Length: 498
Image 1 (spheres, rainbow, N blue to C red):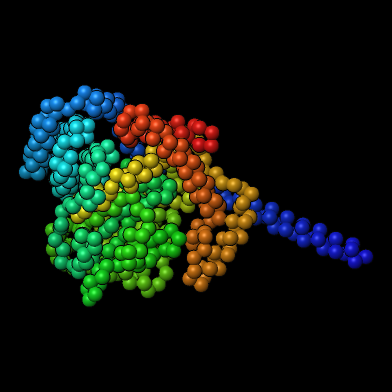
Image 2 (tube, rainbow, N blue to C red; image 1 turned 120 degrees about the vertical axis):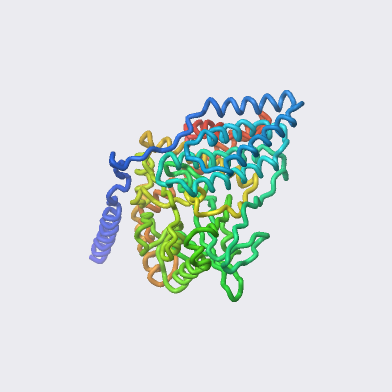
């Protein structure tokens, strides 16, 4: 009798557990059904469509390495002088975004890069000219309509393109040929300042960085104008102590204020420091405006909890994603950053981002700030070791996004969903007491599993790509240029497990 009752209890428990498991196994409404943009507002992703040109540059580079560089030094010197004169000519006049001078500038920068790199001559001069070119082009853009597609394309081709050329040279250069820190324009500022690792930070400055996670590469590359940055942080300098605090939004914990040491401890593949132009009308009227914005952001971060905004809605400030921390604070004081916002128009990419919880496909991407004419580049940090990781991440991401356009989905291990939901419930309890669990506040259990799936798939392809890239280096005697990395990543993706 007792045995029969015990058996029934065990069967009942098993049945209840099975029922609960099955209930928890019911999937959420699919997050991969993002609609394509309407025809009235449709944008188109930028594409270089210059594979033959890139291959020709690589061929020229390889031939120079084999044949030697006799007489090339004089040619490089003349080419660099010509680019410098062209930049000066551009700076001396006001040009439309489609002026032929910009096409000439792009061609000269790309055409000179293989000679500089193959012969290791004029490296520092090329880097300096690229910085001068960026300043001249950004100055021209102060008079342009940042909502124009023509403007965005001109800025992207010149600023992103010249960055690509510089970093191809840096990747191939001998160790120590380039400093990790590149100094830009030390824009004057009336706000409190702090010296950090040989760079002067001012209250109201913006740090744009690139994280080391696969999802960071997706943020940087996942829009119509693939960029190099995935995160925005806002600098606040205490006027009394002269200590800098970094205000930023983290997926795991929302908006926080960190020390500089804590900020630098997080893995970053590159960092760029931006500062509002001193001659902006808003700053002419109130030079302390950047500090007021930074102080507001700092107080909001330290006086209450602000959740992370997975939807990326830059118009609703109840929750904040990283770009919004700076844009919302400056907006309160009349300075509207992100003069040109990003659009995400590719259907496959929209579907993937929707699976991660994104609901807004016109938003403020971190990379956008590089092109904002209201901001000046003060300094940038990068080195060959971190560039290599950056390039591998980007190549894998681009190939995965190609798959998204062909119908690849962001899957997850369905059988783990009940366990993930239990973990999520536990995390929600922790969040109520101000603590952080393994699944971030605002992220669903399904999204957490999809994120894990994406990161593991990215890692598997990148490991194969790293092996293939090393083989390329051994066979050719130089690092694979970026376009070759993308080709190798396509092969790595097709391998078993990729």
